[in-house]
Length: 147
Length: 82
Image 1 (cartoon, one colour):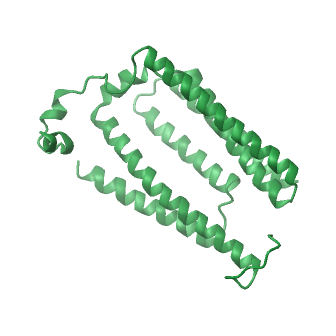
Image 2: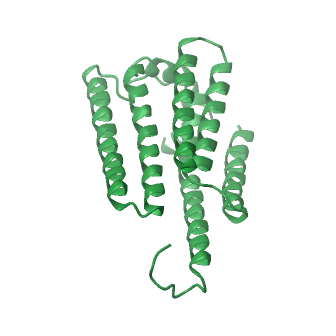
Image 3: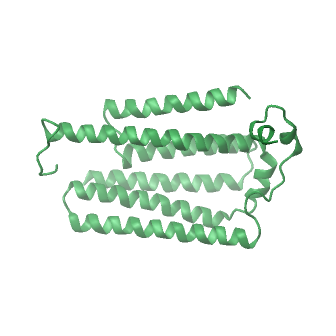
């Protein structure tokens, strides 16, 4: 679709497909990183169920819902920008990208409000009791090593 | 244009799934809540990958499948040893 000559590929179509594949490989590598983080979250959730249940009472359902809707809408405007760019409608593309940026800023503002409220109510992490069972477990990795 | 309809369908589908998530948080289904939320999250991921990110073609799908395979190994071997 770009007017420029490709250096590395015979045809623009082939270059586009290579670009596409590389982007998915990149996303796959991101999934590896975030997969490990989600795994840590899952293991903590399994080990510290009551603490997670207590902490979840501090979460705001309306704010969380609004922020998820903001994220979904920004995904939509981003996909819209991609579609418009393929149709070379640049002005509309820029408007869709601007909307995506504005929604990103909106997301951060809501996050700021959420964390501000939690700090105000002294609800941030590490304030919830960890059961003694965890500390006593012989093969519980971090605690037994650090002591 | 049909592309716009595709994106709008994805957007409305994601909002419906969000509503389902919020609704499920208001009723206590026991252990089923977690399973339901994971299923909803998976459905959202499929909608986004197919409609918003145009996951088409054999090679890109193979790359995503490979990432999924390694995640299964990561989660499986970690949780099986506990």
